[in-house]
Image (tube, rainbow, N blue to C red; front, side):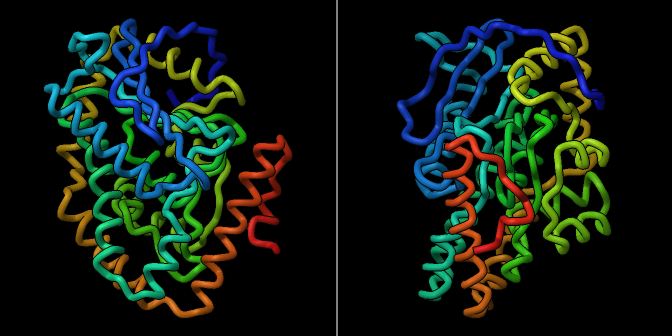
Length: 310
Protein backbone atom coordinates (compact mmCIF):
# COMPACT_ATOMS: atom_id res chain seq x y z
CA UNK A 1 0.00 0.00 0.00
CA UNK A 2 3.00 2.30 0.49
CA UNK A 3 4.27 2.25 -3.08
CA UNK A 4 3.89 4.36 -6.18
CA UNK A 5 1.37 2.40 -8.23
CA UNK A 6 0.54 2.18 -11.90
CA UNK A 7 -3.23 2.34 -11.86
CA UNK A 8 -5.56 1.05 -14.51
CA UNK A 9 -8.53 3.00 -15.82
CA UNK A 10 -11.76 2.04 -14.11
CA UNK A 11 -14.87 3.77 -15.43
CA UNK A 12 -17.01 4.90 -12.49
CA UNK A 13 -20.78 4.83 -12.61
CA UNK A 14 -22.01 7.03 -9.78
CA UNK A 15 -25.37 8.50 -8.84
CA UNK A 16 -25.80 11.91 -7.23
CA UNK A 17 -27.42 11.49 -3.82
CA UNK A 18 -28.48 13.68 -0.93
CA UNK A 19 -29.84 17.18 -0.98
CA UNK A 20 -28.93 19.65 -3.73
CA UNK A 21 -26.18 21.16 -1.57
CA UNK A 22 -24.62 24.45 -2.58
CA UNK A 23 -21.02 23.60 -1.67
CA UNK A 24 -20.87 19.79 -1.51
CA UNK A 25 -21.42 17.20 -4.23
CA UNK A 26 -22.27 13.69 -2.99
CA UNK A 27 -22.27 10.62 -5.24
CA UNK A 28 -22.80 6.90 -4.69
CA UNK A 29 -21.23 4.02 -6.64
CA UNK A 30 -23.22 0.80 -6.29
CA UNK A 31 -20.43 -1.42 -7.62
CA UNK A 32 -17.96 -0.49 -4.91
CA UNK A 33 -20.55 0.63 -2.33
CA UNK A 34 -18.62 3.88 -2.04
CA UNK A 35 -19.86 7.38 -1.23
CA UNK A 36 -17.84 10.16 -2.86
CA UNK A 37 -18.11 13.53 -1.13
CA UNK A 38 -16.60 16.39 -3.11
CA UNK A 39 -15.79 19.72 -1.50
CA UNK A 40 -17.06 22.45 -3.81
CA UNK A 41 -16.80 25.74 -1.89
CA UNK A 42 -17.74 29.08 -3.33
CA UNK A 43 -15.00 31.71 -3.47
CA UNK A 44 -11.74 30.84 -1.77
CA UNK A 45 -11.59 27.02 -1.36
CA UNK A 46 -11.63 27.02 2.44
CA UNK A 47 -13.96 25.66 5.09
CA UNK A 48 -16.42 28.53 5.12
CA UNK A 49 -19.59 28.36 7.21
CA UNK A 50 -21.74 27.29 4.27
CA UNK A 51 -19.45 24.39 3.41
CA UNK A 52 -19.32 23.26 7.04
CA UNK A 53 -23.12 23.39 7.27
CA UNK A 54 -23.46 21.26 4.13
CA UNK A 55 -20.98 18.68 5.43
CA UNK A 56 -22.66 18.44 8.83
CA UNK A 57 -26.11 18.08 7.27
CA UNK A 58 -24.81 15.39 4.91
CA UNK A 59 -23.24 13.49 7.79
CA UNK A 60 -26.52 13.64 9.73
CA UNK A 61 -28.34 12.08 6.78
CA UNK A 62 -26.10 9.00 6.91
CA UNK A 63 -26.80 8.59 10.63
CA UNK A 64 -30.54 9.08 10.07
CA UNK A 65 -30.43 6.34 7.42
CA UNK A 66 -28.69 3.88 9.72
CA UNK A 67 -25.30 4.30 8.05
CA UNK A 68 -26.69 3.73 4.57
CA UNK A 69 -26.98 5.87 1.45
CA UNK A 70 -30.36 6.80 0.01
CA UNK A 71 -29.91 6.23 -3.73
CA UNK A 72 -32.79 6.37 -6.18
CA UNK A 73 -35.33 5.63 -3.48
CA UNK A 74 -33.56 2.70 -1.83
CA UNK A 75 -31.16 2.45 1.09
CA UNK A 76 -27.77 1.14 -0.06
CA UNK A 77 -24.86 -0.18 2.05
CA UNK A 78 -21.71 1.91 2.42
CA UNK A 79 -18.29 0.29 2.59
CA UNK A 80 -16.16 3.31 1.67
CA UNK A 81 -16.36 7.06 2.20
CA UNK A 82 -14.14 8.96 -0.23
CA UNK A 83 -13.38 12.65 0.36
CA UNK A 84 -12.19 14.71 -2.62
CA UNK A 85 -12.42 18.19 -4.13
CA UNK A 86 -14.08 19.73 -7.17
CA UNK A 87 -11.60 22.66 -7.16
CA UNK A 88 -8.89 21.87 -9.68
CA UNK A 89 -5.42 21.51 -8.11
CA UNK A 90 -6.71 22.45 -4.64
CA UNK A 91 -8.12 20.11 -1.99
CA UNK A 92 -8.75 22.80 0.60
CA UNK A 93 -6.90 25.76 2.14
CA UNK A 94 -8.37 25.12 5.58
CA UNK A 95 -9.86 27.69 7.92
CA UNK A 96 -11.74 30.78 6.73
CA UNK A 97 -8.96 33.24 7.52
CA UNK A 98 -10.90 36.30 6.36
CA UNK A 99 -13.63 35.39 8.86
CA UNK A 100 -11.03 34.80 11.57
CA UNK A 101 -9.65 38.31 11.14
CA UNK A 102 -13.12 39.84 11.51
CA UNK A 103 -14.02 37.79 14.59
CA UNK A 104 -10.69 38.38 16.30
CA UNK A 105 -10.86 42.13 15.72
CA UNK A 106 -14.39 42.20 17.14
CA UNK A 107 -13.30 39.98 20.10
CA UNK A 108 -16.16 37.58 19.36
CA UNK A 109 -15.03 34.51 21.27
CA UNK A 110 -18.40 32.79 21.02
CA UNK A 111 -18.47 33.00 17.22
CA UNK A 112 -14.90 31.71 16.97
CA UNK A 113 -15.77 28.78 19.23
CA UNK A 114 -18.93 28.08 17.23
CA UNK A 115 -16.90 27.91 14.00
CA UNK A 116 -14.30 25.67 15.64
CA UNK A 117 -16.99 23.34 17.00
CA UNK A 118 -18.45 22.95 13.50
CA UNK A 119 -15.00 21.91 12.28
CA UNK A 120 -14.68 19.40 15.12
CA UNK A 121 -18.12 17.99 14.36
CA UNK A 122 -17.02 17.34 10.77
CA UNK A 123 -13.64 15.89 11.76
CA UNK A 124 -14.91 13.62 14.50
CA UNK A 125 -17.69 12.33 12.27
CA UNK A 126 -15.09 11.18 9.78
CA UNK A 127 -12.81 9.76 12.47
CA UNK A 128 -15.66 7.49 13.55
CA UNK A 129 -16.66 6.67 9.94
CA UNK A 130 -20.02 8.32 10.64
CA UNK A 131 -20.88 5.56 13.12
CA UNK A 132 -20.25 2.81 10.58
CA UNK A 133 -17.33 0.45 9.99
CA UNK A 134 -16.75 1.81 6.47
CA UNK A 135 -13.22 2.65 5.35
CA UNK A 136 -12.56 6.36 4.87
CA UNK A 137 -10.28 7.57 2.06
CA UNK A 138 -8.96 11.06 1.36
CA UNK A 139 -8.05 11.78 -2.25
CA UNK A 140 -5.63 14.71 -2.49
CA UNK A 141 -5.16 16.29 -5.91
CA UNK A 142 -3.48 19.58 -5.07
CA UNK A 143 -2.92 21.75 -2.01
CA UNK A 144 -4.27 20.60 1.36
CA UNK A 145 -3.23 23.21 3.90
CA UNK A 146 -4.15 23.85 7.53
CA UNK A 147 -7.65 22.50 8.09
CA UNK A 148 -7.52 20.91 4.65
CA UNK A 149 -4.59 18.78 5.81
CA UNK A 150 -6.39 18.04 9.10
CA UNK A 151 -9.40 16.86 7.12
CA UNK A 152 -7.19 14.57 5.00
CA UNK A 153 -5.52 13.10 8.09
CA UNK A 154 -8.88 12.14 9.58
CA UNK A 155 -9.28 9.34 7.00
CA UNK A 156 -8.01 5.79 7.31
CA UNK A 157 -6.21 6.05 3.96
CA UNK A 158 -4.66 8.99 2.10
CA UNK A 159 -4.15 8.74 -1.64
CA UNK A 160 -2.29 11.68 -3.17
CA UNK A 161 -1.15 12.76 -6.60
CA UNK A 162 2.54 13.60 -6.95
CA UNK A 163 2.21 17.38 -7.31
CA UNK A 164 0.07 17.70 -4.17
CA UNK A 165 1.33 19.73 -1.23
CA UNK A 166 0.31 19.55 2.42
CA UNK A 167 1.27 21.37 5.57
CA UNK A 168 0.33 23.70 8.41
CA UNK A 169 1.26 27.35 7.71
CA UNK A 170 -0.56 28.70 10.81
CA UNK A 171 2.67 29.41 12.71
CA UNK A 172 3.44 32.11 10.13
CA UNK A 173 0.75 34.25 11.74
CA UNK A 174 1.63 33.12 15.27
CA UNK A 175 -1.11 30.51 15.66
CA UNK A 176 -1.38 26.72 15.46
CA UNK A 177 -3.81 24.34 13.68
CA UNK A 178 -6.37 23.79 16.42
CA UNK A 179 -8.92 21.44 14.91
CA UNK A 180 -7.20 18.07 15.19
CA UNK A 181 -3.71 18.43 13.73
CA UNK A 182 -1.78 17.76 16.95
CA UNK A 183 -3.96 14.80 17.95
CA UNK A 184 -3.77 13.16 14.53
CA UNK A 185 -0.08 13.78 13.86
CA UNK A 186 1.02 12.74 17.35
CA UNK A 187 -0.72 9.40 16.98
CA UNK A 188 0.88 8.73 13.60
CA UNK A 189 4.35 10.23 14.02
CA UNK A 190 4.81 10.84 17.74
CA UNK A 191 4.56 14.11 19.67
CA UNK A 192 8.06 15.39 18.81
CA UNK A 193 7.62 15.05 15.05
CA UNK A 194 4.10 16.48 15.26
CA UNK A 195 5.43 19.56 17.04
CA UNK A 196 8.25 19.96 14.54
CA UNK A 197 5.83 19.87 11.62
CA UNK A 198 3.45 22.36 13.22
CA UNK A 199 6.11 24.79 14.44
CA UNK A 200 8.07 24.77 11.17
CA UNK A 201 5.15 25.87 9.01
CA UNK A 202 6.75 23.81 6.24
CA UNK A 203 4.70 22.85 3.21
CA UNK A 204 5.54 19.25 2.33
CA UNK A 205 5.38 17.54 -1.03
CA UNK A 206 3.22 14.43 -1.33
CA UNK A 207 6.41 12.44 -1.92
CA UNK A 208 7.92 13.65 1.39
CA UNK A 209 4.76 12.71 3.27
CA UNK A 210 4.71 9.34 1.54
CA UNK A 211 8.21 8.70 2.87
CA UNK A 212 7.00 9.66 6.36
CA UNK A 213 4.09 7.25 6.06
CA UNK A 214 1.34 9.90 6.16
CA UNK A 215 0.46 9.39 2.49
CA UNK A 216 -0.43 5.75 1.92
CA UNK A 217 -0.61 5.69 -1.88
CA UNK A 218 1.30 8.06 -4.18
CA UNK A 219 0.26 8.20 -7.84
CA UNK A 220 1.03 10.28 -10.94
CA UNK A 221 -0.99 13.43 -11.53
CA UNK A 222 -4.36 12.77 -13.09
CA UNK A 223 -4.55 9.21 -11.74
CA UNK A 224 -6.08 9.94 -8.34
CA UNK A 225 -9.63 8.72 -8.93
CA UNK A 226 -8.40 5.64 -10.73
CA UNK A 227 -6.11 4.96 -7.79
CA UNK A 228 -9.07 5.02 -5.40
CA UNK A 229 -10.86 2.39 -7.50
CA UNK A 230 -7.65 0.41 -7.80
CA UNK A 231 -7.23 0.48 -4.01
CA UNK A 232 -10.81 -0.67 -3.47
CA UNK A 233 -10.62 -3.52 -5.99
CA UNK A 234 -7.14 -4.62 -4.89
CA UNK A 235 -8.25 -4.87 -1.26
CA UNK A 236 -11.73 -6.25 -1.95
CA UNK A 237 -10.97 -9.81 -0.84
CA UNK A 238 -9.53 -8.67 2.48
CA UNK A 239 -11.90 -5.76 3.14
CA UNK A 240 -13.48 -7.40 6.19
CA UNK A 241 -10.11 -7.75 7.91
CA UNK A 242 -9.03 -4.30 6.76
CA UNK A 243 -12.16 -2.65 8.14
CA UNK A 244 -11.72 -4.50 11.43
CA UNK A 245 -8.09 -3.36 11.62
CA UNK A 246 -9.08 0.30 11.24
CA UNK A 247 -11.68 -0.18 13.98
CA UNK A 248 -8.90 -1.59 16.17
CA UNK A 249 -6.84 1.52 15.41
CA UNK A 250 -9.69 3.69 16.69
CA UNK A 251 -9.87 1.67 19.91
CA UNK A 252 -6.10 1.60 20.44
CA UNK A 253 -5.51 5.31 19.77
CA UNK A 254 -8.92 6.96 20.15
CA UNK A 255 -9.26 10.64 19.32
CA UNK A 256 -12.21 11.61 21.50
CA UNK A 257 -14.60 14.47 20.89
CA UNK A 258 -13.69 15.92 24.30
CA UNK A 259 -9.99 15.93 23.41
CA UNK A 260 -10.66 17.78 20.17
CA UNK A 261 -12.91 20.32 21.89
CA UNK A 262 -10.43 20.94 24.71
CA UNK A 263 -7.69 21.67 22.17
CA UNK A 264 -9.91 23.93 20.11
CA UNK A 265 -10.66 25.96 23.25
CA UNK A 266 -6.90 26.50 23.48
CA UNK A 267 -6.95 27.57 19.82
CA UNK A 268 -9.73 30.11 20.40
CA UNK A 269 -7.90 31.68 23.35
CA UNK A 270 -4.66 31.78 21.34
CA UNK A 271 -6.44 33.39 18.39
CA UNK A 272 -7.78 36.15 20.61
CA UNK A 273 -4.23 36.91 21.77
CA UNK A 274 -3.01 37.64 18.25
CA UNK A 275 -1.64 41.12 17.67
CA UNK A 276 -2.07 43.48 14.72
CA UNK A 277 1.10 42.26 13.00
CA UNK A 278 -0.20 38.68 13.22
CA UNK A 279 -3.54 39.66 11.70
CA UNK A 280 -1.73 41.50 8.92
CA UNK A 281 0.20 38.32 8.13
CA UNK A 282 -3.08 36.39 8.14
CA UNK A 283 -4.41 38.91 5.64
CA UNK A 284 -1.35 38.38 3.46
CA UNK A 285 -2.02 34.65 3.47
CA UNK A 286 -5.63 35.27 2.40
CA UNK A 287 -4.38 37.34 -0.55
CA UNK A 288 -1.79 34.66 -1.35
CA UNK A 289 -4.54 32.04 -1.46
CA UNK A 290 -6.56 34.22 -3.80
CA UNK A 291 -3.55 34.64 -6.09
CA UNK A 292 -2.85 30.91 -6.04
CA UNK A 293 -6.46 30.14 -6.87
CA UNK A 294 -6.38 32.53 -9.82
CA UNK A 295 -3.10 31.05 -11.05
CA UNK A 296 -4.37 27.49 -10.68
CA UNK A 297 -7.51 28.33 -12.63
CA UNK A 298 -5.35 29.79 -15.41
CA UNK A 299 -3.16 26.68 -15.47
CA UNK A 300 -0.06 28.53 -14.28
CA UNK A 301 2.53 26.77 -12.09
CA UNK A 302 2.80 27.68 -8.41
CA UNK A 303 6.17 28.47 -6.85
CA UNK A 304 6.04 27.60 -3.12
CA UNK A 305 8.80 30.12 -2.41
CA UNK A 306 6.50 32.92 -3.57
CA UNK A 307 3.50 31.93 -1.47
CA UNK A 308 3.80 34.90 0.89
CA UNK A 309 5.52 37.43 -1.34
CA UNK A 310 3.50 40.51 -2.28
